Image 1 (cartoon, rainbow, N blue to C red):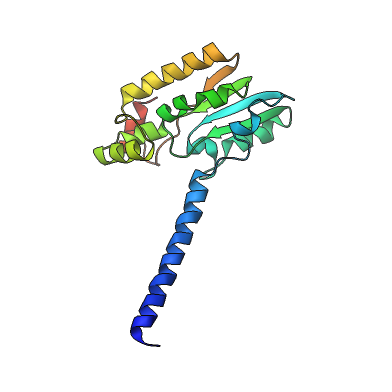
Image 2 (spheres, rainbow, N blue to C red):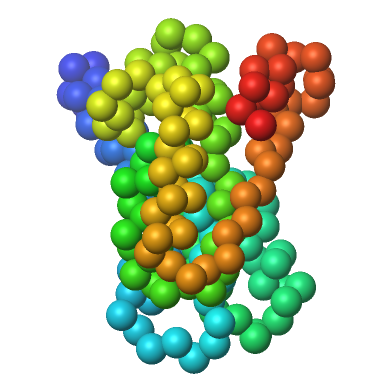
Length: 187
């Protein structure tokens, strides 16, 4: 086999491996939980429903799944609905509230804002999040606050659910780190 043929075969194999890795990561990063809201919309309620709404911290496929910890603690007396979406900002959660409302929840637990804070750390992050999450304009702390107010208003108007907000976790181990100090502005 000559060197050119070997190089062509090698590049084809490398491309196939790269595509395979990309598809695996894409599927992993953007996969919805099995118990996502679309499963429960217009379904009769057998038990009281708890909806967990937020970003990847709620989705639980990239970190510890706190929704499963709560399910394990509370047992089978509730239906647990996971409305977490990786990389979501408060704007994205606000835009998908209808699917949460249509689940007819009794309780809603919201953990959102880590990506809002991360998106405003620097100009490059703003550009990445704006493009990745189809934001109409760059994220800001003011928009985050407005989105939270609108989320609360929409849930109050359209549900009878009790709503709880969970504080965002520490970013990193150093409490004096720029990221953690910036996050404090969002709490």
